Length: 468
Ligand SMILES: *[C@@H]1O[C@H](CO)[C@@H](O)[C@H](O)[C@H]1NC(C)=O
Ligand SMILES: *[C@@H]1O[C@H](CO)[C@@H](O)[C@H](O)[C@H]1NC(C)=O
Image (cartoon, rainbow, N blue to C red):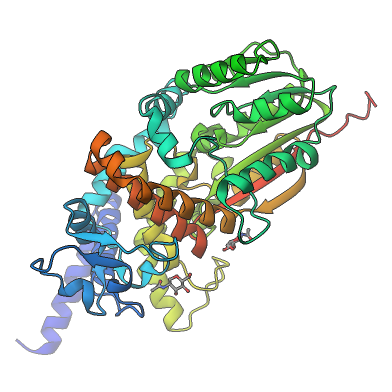
């Protein structure tokens, strides 16, 4: 058979395939091809600059560990299996466990990860009813109460503070930051009517009550947290000035404009991307004109949702699917970047593939092993927050980037966790210890490198013209 005939036959075959097949077959073929290319490119990724041995230590000498010592990249699932089986450790070094590990680990999309995504993560993300939100929140906070003390210490403050001095400890920074939140961001005065949307363990409320004669409503889904906070308030004889609820704040019967100040440090993370517009609208309605709302947001870098930036307006499913597509197509855009093709569609200097795969696997790991249901961050970008805020009619008074602070915050938790290792393993088992350890080190590392972002928003409901 001559080359010409082979070419001709191939052309005929391709032609009949593309004209004769349904759209579905075509789409599936494209996805499958992209998937295979993606897998191969991640699997045979270029040698990292930082060898795995700088981050990971094989725990026994007879473990075949050349992969960890040579300057060669390790597929994430190989590492995860070894890690959970106690064959490698995360190297503890200046608090940050995995600061450059994107240089030594690759994150191929495997069938297993796609399966986990489609079956475990995506349905929760799309469904995300209030009942599901409550169930997830309670599962996380209600069951392992003293585990949080191991993580956070006696104060039990879980929010990311702004570190002002470099030698400040986490607890010191948090204590200072409550002051800053109170005096500058919320600008609390004795006349304020205050709502806290994250009871946490009641520490913030107590701090406010010790400074000002306020009456506070505080809510979270967790029964344990509310009880703990109630006990704390009773001990401080402040329980007649604070009321702890355990409902979704959208189900509580508050009056419109009942509050002048609202604080929400972690609730946005749990509420689900599709509820963000509703969240901000409800806050807007609960605030009196001129009232303030302070929130923390955790978001993925905009590359992650660059094909899905309009997802706040459209149903979130659209965002999820296009993000998955951008993930599959990432190697192609990488090729595009190499040949100098313009990347005008995405305004990212480094091309799409930079954090896509790592962030995706990070979310899969967190949302299946650590905190199922806390998935606002999955595809939400800062732009999504800004859009939801503006559509709700709130003004942005101030926006702080807390990403580096968050990295430091998780690094300190990582150190606390390491410190109490024996106790945690005895009480909760090795698996829990390790999952959380990886979660903390990885989160710290991603925040440090910009693969996750945390921001503080100070928002205000504008004064209406007609009631001024
Ligand atoms: C790892 O992350 C850093 C950003 O902190 C980036 O500069 C570097 O290119 C990344 N390496 C790889 C191989 O993606
Ligand atoms: C916030 O800070 C991080 C880390 O310093 C950075 O990567 C990120 O781009 C910043 N975000 C914005 C919106 O500037």
